[in-house]
Image (cartoon, rainbow, N blue to C red; front, top):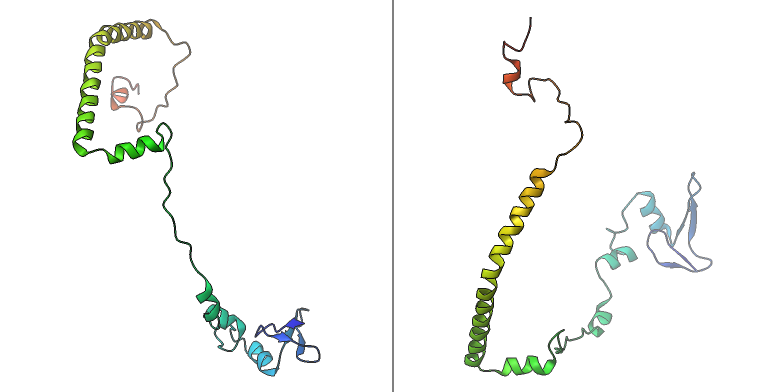
Amino acid sequence: LELCNYSGYKIYPGHGKRYIRIDGKTFHFLNGKAEASHLMRRNPRKVSWTVVYRRKHKKGKIEESSKKRTRRTTKFQRAIQGATLENIMAKRNQKPEVRKAQREQAIRAAKEKQKGKKPSQAPKASAQAAKQSKSKAGKVLKGSAPKRALSPITNPPSLYSRANIAL
């Protein structure tokens, strides 16, 4: 069984016509109507009786689409890294007052920790800054400086004053 190159319908043995173009490409047509439409260069996507048109415009597929059903998503709870499902559920079921009290207590603890750290860090930080400034000042970079082109666009006008230019 072959398919009609224009309409897309099956061509049974003993039916249809074969058309061979000068460049050697062969076309199989179901009937004269399909052949004539092809030779008139009609677009099969715009001709309503072709298979291509029916596919494009979703004709004849009503029964199949009604059978399709989409899956419903189900909620599923899992543990998160660092917290088990029991811990999460316990926190969710807590009263807001208890949760607020815990949060304030954690904030207070963090502030106390920060107060303890700050005085000890200040001298260390200043000492490190002094060390870095000394090491940067002591280093001398080797190598020649990049050569500058003498053009009035890139160089400042002070290089081209009357005193520097000898005529």
